[in-house]
Amino acid sequence: MNKFPKESIFKTPENYFDSLPDRILRKRKQRIRQLYLTGVAAAVVFVVGFALVLVPRVESDATNFQTAINEEVDYYITAGTWDEVDVLLLADNPNELLDAITAAEWRSELGAEDEELLLNEILF
Image (cartoon, rainbow, N blue to C red; front, side, top):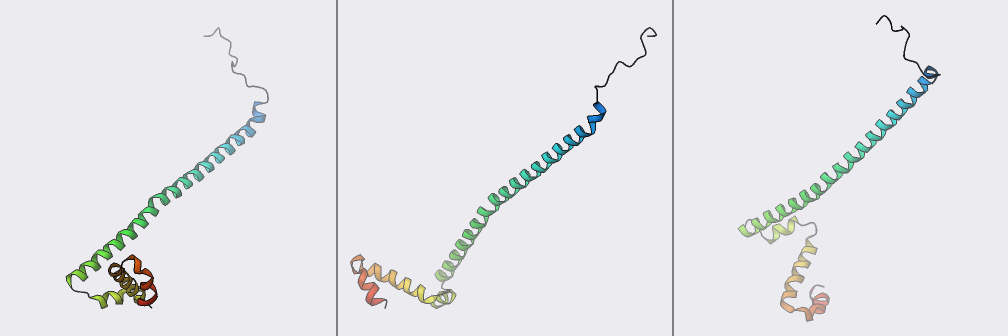
């Protein structure tokens, strides 16, 4: 080992330390940009996923709620707890509901050929 020269066998390229700060800053800016883009992509995925999961569930819950209400109303009517007056009192516009019921009953009795008679004379 003593025969080997004690020189440094490693050589630095010329101007290595002069350009080192610029290279470090350039790499740091690239990493910051990469982290920023990754964060934006994650936020977009989160928002889209949240919308896909929540929106159908809200519509489904509203449909299930309305179905449950309809079943409960049918139960009360069938059981005799509620009568026609009670149902009309629950309606937002009882006159429209009565017109629809009357039209449906008269249509079934009169048939399709008397549709004009129904609209012009019976309902008005």
